[in-house]
Length: 435
Image 1 (cartoon, rainbow, N blue to C red):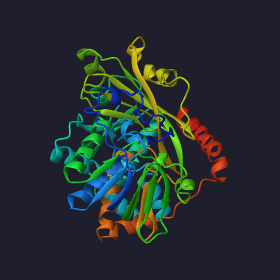
Image 2: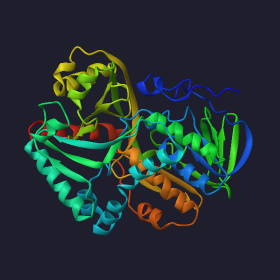
Image 3: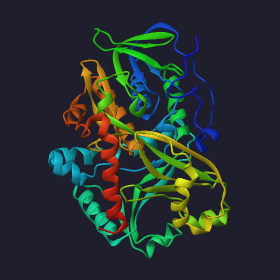
Image 4: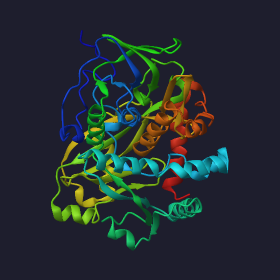
């Protein structure tokens, strides 16, 4: 029986540039009948794929269940930027949780990018991997923030970043908009959907099994061995890993209030001439500014400008994505005002109230990871490794994150959206007036 329509419609990828330029469109089979595996991973985004790939490399019998297609959610729609760090800054983590926790986080914030580069090299994943990313500042207040960030990160032994002056930044971005910035030589960018597809291929090469179009309708975590049920089958496993993130829905009620879906938007221009692309981004780095609601952009392999930004709390899609993003793109690059937009799309990430991702257990053999709050490309790969360590017996790093307290959204699910909108107004006011 074919699964009924659900959050993913018919399961097809969104009409994004990434889906149009994907390396492969192979459809994996739907889960049918009752099956058994050592480990069942729910969700074929980066968290689930990273966890499964680490486990298959150790010879474990692993199944991944995806309700739509591999990388259907944020992992196949995001800005494609390898940005080191969490949404919550090291300053915030140090102030809120203490220096020991901040030291631990500082020790792993570079790990996700390293894992991605290792995966690309080991499995020859064709995902247009490129080096470096640039944080840009609009105001002197933003520059002071970057200076403080640089000093703090260097205090924790991270030496990959350097400040860029207003004069120097033109070597990286052909725009008059910025007061300066900070370059991270350990950052980079990728075609995100092709990375996910390459990791899925690697899992299968290592003996793992992937089921697509297999929406989970029920999870029994109270049994001695967890059972995951879809409309056409079930998996009984020794260990269950829940990596549905913003798209897990209400299948596991214990996780629903922990995060809020938030949509962000991306658009892709028509291919630019070599000369124009070189003027806009001379070093082909990826860029994001440091405002509360930020813009991010980069060049694709075929010289399109991929420009993203904006947020909609609660996860709704804007009526006109191009209209929402166009004015910001034109402000940064006025010479693109007449440039055609070929693709525009939206997708959800999972926001935690603390902006710190969450990892834990619902019982002794059911694990979860979610809430990367817009910084999931690197964080999800690190969390996948840490989950695999815990499942195979090393809980030292897992325990640190499991013991970080999660904070519920004020007002619960009913008021979390208006509360977050009011907060964004406040921080947007500060950004606008350089406070």
